[in-house]
Amino acid sequence: MAASRRGARPLTAGDNFTLEHGVRGSAGSGGAWRTDIGASLPPGQVDTILEEAQDIVYGDREQTHGDPGRNLRAIAAMWSPVFGVTVTEQQVVMAMILLKVARAINMPAHRDHWRDIAGYVALAERAGHIATEGKS
Image (cartoon, rainbow, N blue to C red; front, side, top):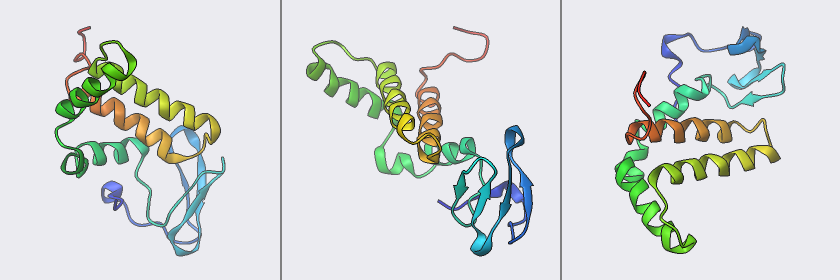
């Protein structure tokens, strides 16, 4: 996925920057960059995790996986006989988030885990499984 950077200029070698929550970093050669907490990203990738998740959930992922609500219903229907209980769409999303949390325990700095967790939350919202502001 191409980074959008929301109109910012590309980083060049030697550039210093500050990310969310005060994390500082510097750009290296070839466009790669590294932060002071040890996280690094490939060249040109400077979108936030939330922006990346949004691009995936509202972008090409639907072409690959189909309508989010229909997909969650299909997964729930397949899991129900396997587990011997009725599995809901919300439980599918929660289970997928927990899968990513379990993987993150092994490698907490791995960006994909956190992006996927944010993506599953966005997917639940997009499929209508999260109450709108002020409603529960």
